[in-house]
Length: 82
View (tube, rainbow, N blue to C red):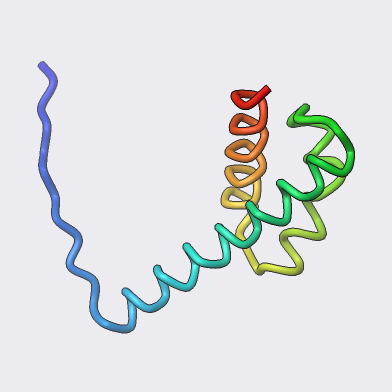
């Protein structure tokens, strides 16, 4: 039996600010990754990851998971435009 639970997040002002700043850094990282994808003319996720993974993590202070998700998001968006 599958059950569903609806949960509402209620972050404090400090937590909200941290979440918002993380979202902004994530979006900025996606923009920079997109520039790289255009420059190397490839939306191949593995190729892009080899090129941008460490510089993006260092520049934007994202976790490993968020960095990989940003790369995946950009590559998929670029493939859909082709």
